[in-house]
Amino acid sequence: MTKKGFPKNFLWGGALAANQVEGAWNIDGKGLSVADMATYRSNLSLDDYEGHMAISSDFIEKARKDKDDKVYPKRRGIDFYHRYKEDLALFAEMGFKVLRISIAWSRIFPTGEELEPNEKGLQFYENLFTEMKRLGIEPIVTLSHYEMPLELSLKYNGWVERKVIDDFVLFCNVCFHRYKDLVKYWLTFNEIDSINRHSFTTAGIIPDRCPEGKEDETIYQALHHQFVASALVTANCHRIIEGSQVGCMLTKLTTYPYTCNPNDVEITLKKNLHNYFYADVQVFGEYPVMIERMFERNNIQIKMEPNDREILRNHTVDFVSFSYYMSLTESAEDGLEKTAGNTIMGVKNPHLPSTEWGWQIDPVGLKISLIELYDRYKKPLIIVENGMGAVDKVEEDGSIHDDYRINYFREHFKQMKEAVEDGVDLFGYTSWGPIDLISAGTSQMSKRYGFIYVDQDDEGNGTLNRRRKDSFYWYKKVIESNGEDL
Ligand code: BG6
Image 1: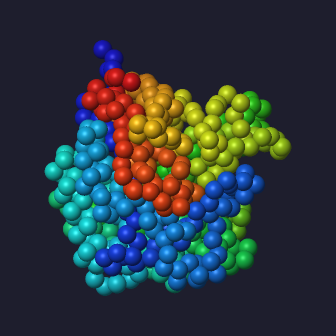
Image 2: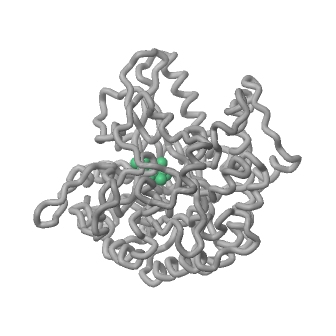
Image 3: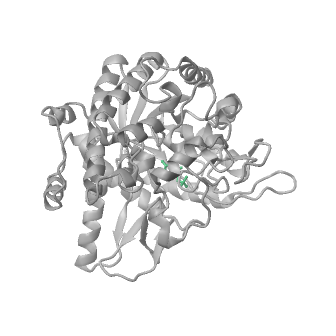
């Protein structure tokens, strides 16, 4: 008999990142992180789309002395730091089985290099996980989600220097020991591939400090350090926490050829392989041959220590997690209409509608991604980000009718279900931003993903009160019926 529907213990829930929700950027000993440098950007022009997250030394110098949180929305977040109990209660009301959160490294090690961790930071996450346990919500914890201590970025150009591996390993060990009875699922680096799209946010790399003409080499060197760190951390986690599970996390940028012209197909194939490369290293434990060839061709020389390859080979991940928001389209021809995506641009696909931010809505692309990932890695999969950023309107009576969001999720869930019925081992789903939060890319508040509305505008005005949107009640029903009642 063919299996129908989602597995019995399917982990339904939502996903957050510390720097986009917590606020309290200078409270209880927290140090500055790279996220605290991000400023609000509206109306991104397509011309500047991929460059909009670049940052300069001069800007950082000015921003780190600036004590205000007005222009740096991630510093204020949605005040999850003080309101997490209320928010967790709402997640529990929806029936969440799992919540993905991240630990802000600079809350535990304010500059990244202290010898002892900051107890107040550790206590905050202990309280959070304890409350989740009380509510029956399983945590899935990202150790690095765009929030490395700023001091490490300034001192070492982030992950470019190998020393940062030791700092990160220490931070992770402290977390594993402290939370070993509370957290079983861990992710090392959020969207590890994004180092190539926004290297400061992902790895603390300040572009004007990279040797001229060696920008790519610098980025791949930092990435290599992250790969090694991820493998070491995976080994430590397994050793310290019995039964723990560690995953990699990829931005799944599924790309289609614009036409069946072989030139379009080839360029697309290469794009997709490049996207896989980041997870390949963490799952297979080695660099793909074609990536090594690309390094040679471009005179990119990665400094490796003698046992790095062995470390990568010996400590691969237990499962694969990924974000999926949209698909992309690629063509060998120039001059085709472009559209924006998750910090990336692609050719506009004439068959797909887009969100107000230009991200193409493609539920079938999620099924394709699931099938491809499972076929390639044969590891359990979990979708740890998916959703639709939209402007919501609060009606006079306080209700929010976000049928567009419900439709987005419904269509994606149908495709997930089909993939599962096709044999994909998918064990969970966490929607991105189940409560409205600060956008990673633009620091906007008005780009809302949540089932729960937060009363705050782009300038930080508002009561911060939480409200249930229509999608809140709908997702509750979905979870209750284990994905049957869509
Ligand atoms: C992912 C990030 O790339 O996309 C999240 O992991 C982010 O942190 C999400 O918030 C959506 O992007 P944005 O720019 O709309 O917040």
